[in-house]
Length: 253
Image (cartoon, rainbow, N blue to C red; front, side, top):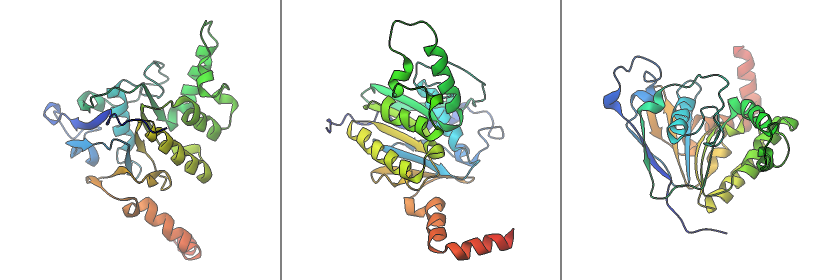
């Protein structure tokens, strides 16, 4: 069922540049952060993409923490901390919120999902009169599933619609088939008035048609189409000219 649109929960983010004393220190020295002023977000899906090391995860983390999510992931109710490594960028990020508030939300972070799963098991081992937390993730411990299955369990069971979902490299444990299923799940949730901000290397996940795609480089941020990303171009070239590209790679090795 398609619900009446409520507009974006998060309209844009702004960097409070006047409060930053130096752009020589991490994370402000990163090109994508150094030149950031305002980033307008699509009411449905916004992609944050680029090569490793340009600041994608740092930016995603700052948005999530500024919204109130745990830096290691989960809902706003998760407060565990395995290791405090997040930057202070969130302190300089201003969130321009929409008129309506979401009913649901989740910060999915592939690199710390194991810690999230462990925290869920720990909390479920404590006495409680309410339902187990794992019941919201399909009823099975995330540690008792394969890496890919545990990822997809959150997308399928925990994401309830009309939510703000911030996903940092959700494709990390997903096969191409599961990535396509994930794209379909995103569309289902968008029809239920959800908004996504996604950092990914997967051309499959980048394929949502009604979206913004921001490409981060060492020189800054620019808006691109899927077909203009290196991810798409290189993958297409490899599939169309596999023998030639493999030969060239081996010659350079």
